[in-house]
Length: 584
Image (cartoon, rainbow, N blue to C red):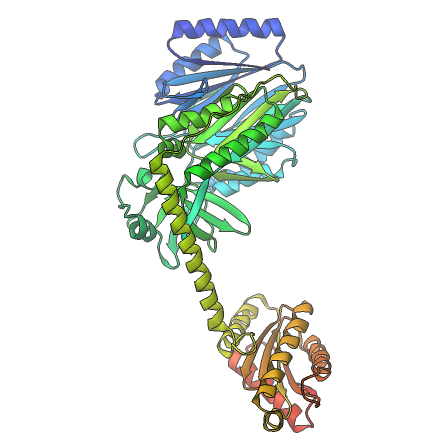
């Protein structure tokens, strides 16, 4: 495998470069050619001149590219208008395919079908590269198309750069510069290997908030307040045309179901809702993040060590333009050059980065996605890895890092204190189970839930028999012992029952449980619990029993109606001799 990397400085020299590439291809009998064209501040007219020359002088070459916010060239950041990278694959069965797909939300099902259909025709499919433009379509839905590929297929790529003043665009062989489009590049070959790694470094800070309303990539409210308020309150970022860049270094982390995505704000609407670079899910937990310099450096070093072990022959790098804005040119060059020490590297600064991890494809921001490529087995000793030079911490960065760490630690303490307060507010302090207010709320929620889904549930209520005599004979400390032990025993038994039970102290010596089962199953559970409670030993020599009432939800029931009915069932048990279960 061979990679050629040049800056486009004019037609004559470019044609000469192409002739040398063709000669190398012929001499080494290369089987496939792919050319990346990265257009930094280049207008579509300049791109057309470059692609016209390739079509005319090197017609067998496949190419694709996009608008960028700078490129990776020779181990450094380049702001030249156009950078061209030509990769030659030498193994005989190598196969490179190109597909362009529409990214309108209405056509995503058709897009997925096209992506998977083309993938099925590629022999020994090893990886897919995606170059695309961000828009109003569902990025989650687009990424999900790749999850249906075999798990071993690598997926990586980046989004074309665009901002409030310039449009993003992509282009490819047979496709003029355009937006709302993705270029899908398929790499196949029995000896073609890829290793992909994502590098982050952004750290969450501040209190978590819940996404209470979102639709696609529009975030409306956090904790039922306009989303923009968090930027205004904590960072004093104004809602104007500069928000795109002012908020760039403080993206949001959205966490849901063990998945974490970093999203940057694109713009803010007059109602305080915000448009993000990818989908935002209602119910996810949101926090502002910041660039921790030490964490960024640490994550880059870890990523590089992983890529080293793969022993790539070349690398493709998709780095967020936000990292470049955060670091500045000097530190960005240092970050990029760290990869170049491993193997030749090319790439561009993107608006979003795609990677597939553990079979799941995702879009992130402020990340680096690196794809190492190799033909054949790893050759040890092929690459020499210099020892990284010691990194000097800039004094300002150290101060920022320390202040951010202080804020993060203080926030963690506050979150922990708030969680304790929330728990105290719903917990009966003696028995450490739910208090009456919480168990009443849960009964009401359960009634509303089963009204919607048509399922059922039951209430189980029990009361300690002759509790007053325990207090009168043995003292209130003995009475407390009974309540605490019976509550703990019931809690453990219901936890092990698999009935998704909630247990609370209803008042005095009365307890209420919500069981996700029908009345007959609840009756059996009550009998089992009655026997278990009756077998408990206490510090005084007297058995303690309990009486039970059970009722099942009926269509049209209210929370108060069910509570009243189960109370009648319990009263019936008391009236009929105690230490028994009555079902109403």
